[in-house]
Length: 330
Image (cartoon, rainbow, N blue to C red):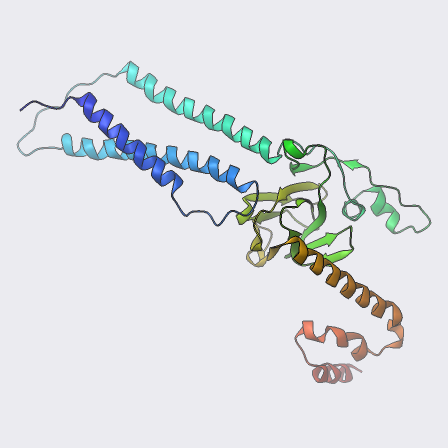
């Protein structure tokens, strides 16, 4: 019986490994559903890396298993093994292949990072609300001195994911100032004055988040968008993206920020344009009503129980219990 050449077995094994790697690399369920323009670029890069990793795993582990079977110790064989001094071509081969792979992935990753806007942030005029909360900023200094005139914010250097090459030098459709604090996210909309504990954005809009941190380093991460950006105390960072699918998606802090780090979660709600306009109008009216109520009432004229009454629901106590507590302290 004629023996099958080793080169033919190698060719067949290579075809099988390639087919399995490509299929598994592009048919996995490791990621949540894509919901931004940046997500396909990140997934494409990950799929390439995953395909290469599967191929290397099959080749290395398959070779180990094959050698364990082929060159296992047989009963009665007490002789020495074959003397092998080395194989220079083989050494060059398995050094060159990883080198080519690493260089290729590096070039690919830089291209993805650039298309996502990672090379763009260098200097941006931020909103007044964002700059005012930066320690040491000129606007922050004038907040305590009403006699000084607040000037327009200057261009502040930023890092993060900015405008893509297609939207370079174009202003974002929506700018939101995001502040991270132990242990919550606060979203401020400078154009409407709305402040929210959730991020609301319209689908298809070019959104720019100006990130900052009040205390320690936080990290704003939306898995469905495949985007993550640190929020740093005193250093402005930026995250710019376009949501492509309406829905509600989790926002997670991905940087250990304290004892309750795991509970620092909120959500981003992607609306249709009509739903977003409705949400914006409703919240503007609600916040204006709350402001009017605060201005109309002089806290000095209120008793302790009356002053705290609007907050009893959030405090988790009843009005009757509040009154009894106040009387016991008087």
